[in-house]
Amino acid sequence: MKILVINGPNLNMLGIREPDHYGKKTYLDLVSDIKAHSEKKGIEVELYQSNHEGDLVDKIQSAYGTADGIVINPGAYTHTSIAILDALKSVNIPTVEVHISKVEEREDFRQISYIRAACAKTITGHGTDGYLEAIDFLLEGK
Ligand code: DQA
Image 1 (cartoon, rainbow, N blue to C red):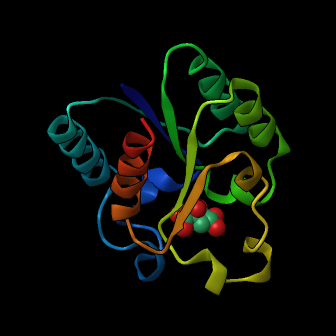
Image 2: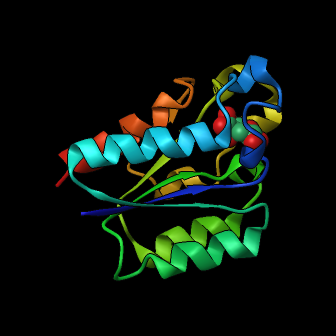
């Protein structure tokens, strides 16, 4: 089983950006936590981060025929990107939406998720552990 974990804009700034919302772990800490978890579960994982919408679309398309599941935190593109929604619908791979913060308790503009319609599950407010829970959800579905 192979899972692709995609992070969108500003998630490379984890540990620096707004720690009250996103905690103190860095992006590299997140990468090593996900790799350790995947190894323990005996699955293959690929991690990708970009600040660019089109690059995220390209990466989702590249999962077609190569990945069994996608875990995605599209950052602010969650609330704006029909292109990412369409890419997820195009590849039709089981996908989990993750947000580190509890988006439902934040600003009005964070209440819309365009990508949710293409996701089997959404995990919010569990910090970086949400990514590991998302992987477990995809594994259980197998
Ligand atoms: C986020 C929430 C988004 O609203 C925000 O733009 C992010 C991170 C989260 O992980 O909580 O960049 O997706």
